[in-house]
Image (cartoon, rainbow, N blue to C red; front, side, top):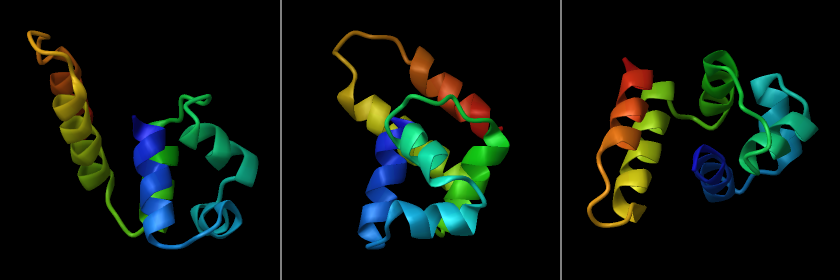
Length: 89
């Protein structure tokens, strides 16, 4: 879900992987793998990409949590959302 959110933000800005990764200070390959959910980036890497996309780690994490909340099956606990909010803290 994090990767989907990053890709969505990048597309909203009309940017290429090269442009965003350059500002974030990560390789284009690494950013691509983040977007596809292949890499499990550190909070520092996520913050760098978030900043390059004009958002904060907090706002990005909250957006991911909201997306998870809206797509979870009925009856499922809030464990995933609580974990996402804990990351913000």
